[in-house]
Length: 112
Image 1: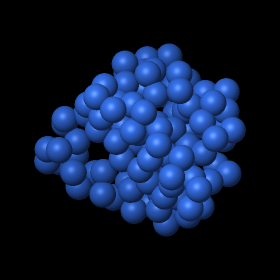
Image 2: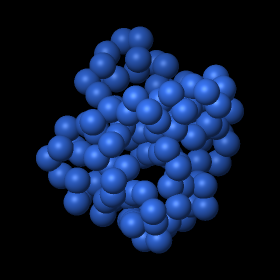
Image 3: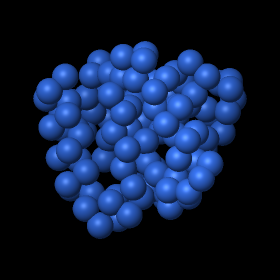
């Protein structure tokens, strides 16, 4: 995966990524710098706060099906082995409880 793929993913973000990015961008959450579609090894993660070693992955319903479950486990283990904490958020959580999602992100960042 290369830089061009990251750029393409940023341009073609999902509605849930766009909604969360509006909240995370420009240090609006805890004055923390988040990047979107950030490359870690061979993977590109949805959001990353490098200072807090936090990765946020947004998951749609297909992540609850085979073979995505196994792929996600392998991917998450790799990212965690690089020293990151991975927070997985379901898309419907963004729709139903965005404030709660932001609170959870802040709580995790306070611990790191």
